[in-house]
View 1 (cartoon, protein in one colour):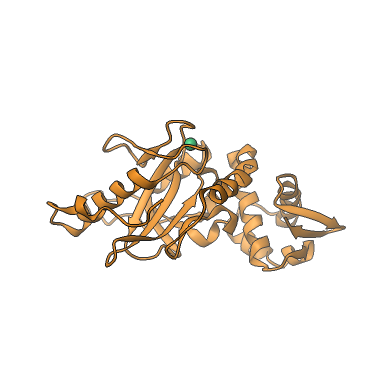
View 2: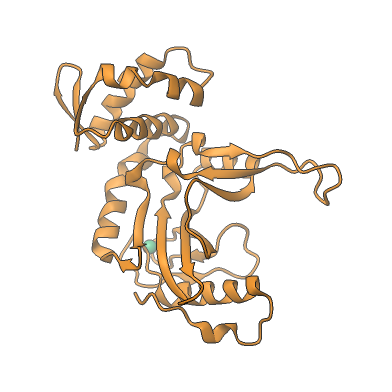
Length: 255
Ligand SMILES: [Zn+2]
């Protein structure tokens, strides 16, 4: 991977957004590899393919690429809320690649991957419907709230201009695969509980440490009245999927 971007592709385009689009797409076509398998290139999808920009010819994974000239932190604007939620529940969402480029140097500053199966529904925030005066009045979009995705599932391909070795990127992706085996309807809970466990910032913790944060989970799952039972159950799921080790009665450590 080379982080220098092919600025020559921008020649002939006047609008900054068009220039940015052809340069980022051109870079991705030349430099992106598949994090899910050993394929060393991704293939652009035909123009106007909805929400999917690249595919892997070997493992058939789909990728959506979003590029911008500032860092991706907090919330990322995405498409229609209903479409995104339906895609998550039917496991048909693409993997998401967030590309932050430096517009002065035309280099890739950061490139982050969130695997398709690692978005908890709690990370999809409904936006306000478009105003009556808008062309698509009433349309409801969504934000992807990055901090609600567990750190394990935010995989850096490039971090502050440093290229991460593809072998370590692929290993991180592989480590997440057990999550894919959990039904989409349950997986949100698993990811949310993992995220809370990571937010404790401790290698070892207890059930009580987790219960102390049950309010956070209650807010994300207002329909569930048995949050402590759910936490206990999901800690076991996280043990079975290799994210946690059970070190004693009600005590856990991050794997
Ligand atoms: Zn692949």
